[in-house]
Amino acid sequence: MSNSTAQKAIQIHPSDNVFVSLQDVKKGEQIKVNSVVIEVQEDIPSGHKMAASKIMNGSNVVKFGYPIGHATRDIVAGEHIHTHNMRTNLSGQLEYTYSPEGNKAFDAYEANIPTFLGYTRENGDVGVRNEIWIINTVGCINKTSENLAILAEKQIKIENIDGIQHFSHPYGCSQLGDDLKYTQKILADLIHHPNAGGVLVLGLGCENNYIDLFKNEIGDYNPNRVKFLSVQQVEDEMELGLELISELAEYASAFSREEVPVSKLKVGLKCGGSDGLSGITANPLVGAFSDMLVKVGGATVLTEVPEMFGAETILMDRAKDEAVFTKIVHLVNDFKQYFIKYEQPVYENPSPGNKKGGITTLEEKSLGCVQKGGFAPILDVLDYGERLRETGLHLLQGPGNDLVSVTALAAAGCQIVLFTTGRGTPFGGPVPTVKISTNTALAEHKKNWIDYNAGVLIGDEGMDNLSDHFFQYILDVASGKRITNNERFGFKEIAIFKDGVTM
Image 1 (cartoon, rainbow, N blue to C red):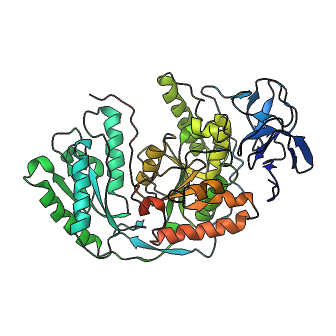
Image 2: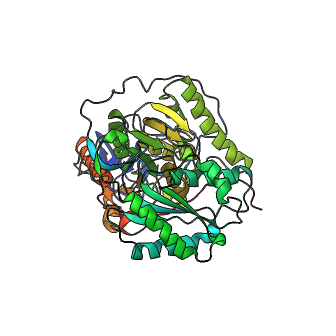
Image 3: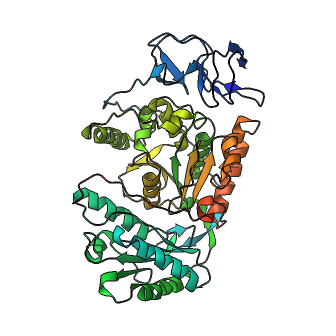
């Protein structure tokens, strides 16, 4: 990729037949990219594509070195390329052949492993926060858990506690089969999360997901760290709830930050509200971070399966072995079948916001999206609600929905989530959620949303310098610096995937 501060457009890959605008350009302007000069045929917004040369009707439009669709009519050089003159090439489920080629040159662990300040739990897991979490088994008591968290924050003053959090959700009752199982798995995963020094499980008493049944999904737990309260069975749930939270806080306060190797970090990778620069700035930056963390023994997790469609073979070629390749095939085709089952188009993914930002087809979105996974080999594929068991890069079953996928990443054990965006969002998950902008204009416009600006890569800032700076930034977050806006402003939410019958 070549660019300079003076350039108004770039060519990402030498084989691309499109240029990407780096700022709004006007009809009649002369644009020079490398040695090619074209005249802009119409006003083109920043992040959008223009033809680098004539593209014939039916011919592929190429970006990132891969086809992202085909022209639906002849397109002349300098013409805007978008939904009005191109379409996806994708359709239905596919068959794939195992042909590994992307995981052979990846470096092994580095000798000098950095450290951060974390909380080592009794089972060896490490948290980056020492919070008390209230997990309610059912949506009927959302306000009870919210009011309890508010009261506890005011009344319980114990040193070394980073906060008392509750996470509202609408489920836990009137659910059947796998639908109820999804709710139980995600809530149980959060109970085991190392960022929680103590957990109060709050139940109503008559729900499908009643506490005694839910304990089967939770499995083994430390009764000093996890306590239960069924509110129908007590006279004053607020009074008893405060007592239990106070006991949990006393237990959690015994933990203190200590120096631990960065190999203990597990980081989720997510993008939302993508634009035409996502695959040029923020996603490659996160990919560089992922590679750096994996090389020193840490773990990263890439989800958003529908946003792998069209770029899945890139991931399949990096499978650790044929067994992992087969898991990726099932991951992709099973999610396509989910769309087909509900008679929904598989490849109409780009949202209105994505399209406004310059993304035209799902192939284009996916080719930018998967760059968050860097170049590391893929060691395993996790089911929805499954927790990490080893280090390295993993794929996780989950939808593209921001709230659901960030929650799934946290439930998998990620202590931090990196969230790239070209459009902006205030949303944050139950763990520190670092919002990384693809462009400087967004970072300057939404300072209460955006934490880190990857848009500087469009100027003179090099990837090597910025990735080193970003890696240290994440270590600072992990070590307790509350510099993410989701923590500063209390944007901490969860959402659970629903696929079933409600009674």
